[in-house]
Image (cartoon, rainbow over all chains, first blue to last red; front, side):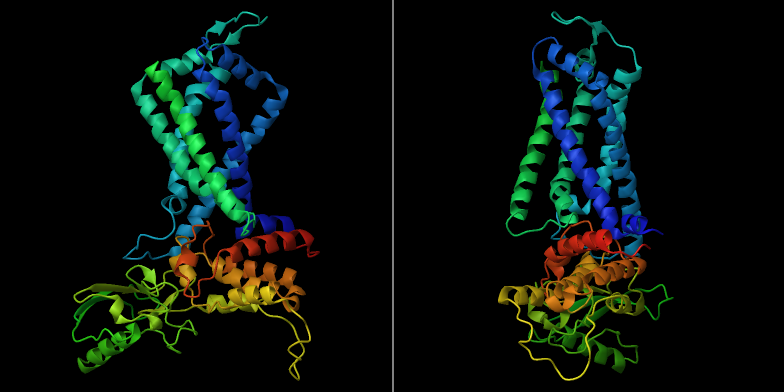
Length: 226
Length: 251
């Protein structure tokens, strides 16, 4: 085996992949949230629909999105591989498990990931697949010389169902728990642990997690109530 | 004090093993945990039963032999101590105490509470040393080392290789042990010379032994009797990344 595959297959290399893909997805979530907050404008979906049109037609975004799909897959596959190995490494389990000093989210990253994957399948089916492959009403806003797909109405329709609102809010809490450990853990895996900067990273991670979780959770609640 | 003990009994590596319940009376709160087990074993011998096998050596917290999980915690409930430093005053009259061996595929049970931790020895053999000529001892001050550096290296070097990190880790990972051994040498000029070869060799051996992969839960540093910090793991991650990129070894 070459040194490179050796490195990638080592436990530290595998963690590096988890860390880098995780950080990439963290950046993505911030961008995704910023875009989606346009759903809160009361403008008949103009801001959001024209933004959605841009996100699906711009060449640079199209290329980046391939990176995003790869990132999600790598993070998920690598996560499953690590998880399987870790379960095998324990062998016989303990009879008594003390409520560990390790946080709830750090001990359950695998399960949280599985729930996120299931949520993601639903989420992609409801919006992403519909936007890319489905048919949608076209809408022409004043001042634009082209018509755009009315994704806003699709979102509005789904969030008028309280069942979906609850599913989305719970899923966001799960994402939040995953991020609670994931954010700071990504830096530790990269070897960044420093007396000066680690407390900053941890604080930033908490703020980021709270903002992202609340930000995403507010959208379905707000749209349902309106 | 009166105690009920639930102890894992297993005659050899191939035996399935199970928990046995024992009742003990007249245990003094001044006894150490291992002395309590000694009392149990004397009682078992008089009853013509096999005593419980457990490892112990120095009984002063520096050898790391007394590996067992007490009520779900390696080395029991006291922070920063080994089982031999744990005293019965940490328990209450009438308590039920569950004692299990360290659980890891890489630490097979030999008998009862005794596990085979030679995987750690093989990790050390894969690079946890420095190459020096034998002969007369060197002058202690021949290589000047800054006080803070010496202290940092010593903090890592206090690892006694007991395996509590593996036992406590939800993933049965040996990253804290391996990183402490990598760090205490990497922090000193004597160890820096072979640091590339060392970290590559030791991490490779650690993976081959079948330990799990670190997910930064921090359970290891919370249970470590020597309170080794996971900063060592970050340092090893850095060292490994650096070594993988800079080493001229192709395979």
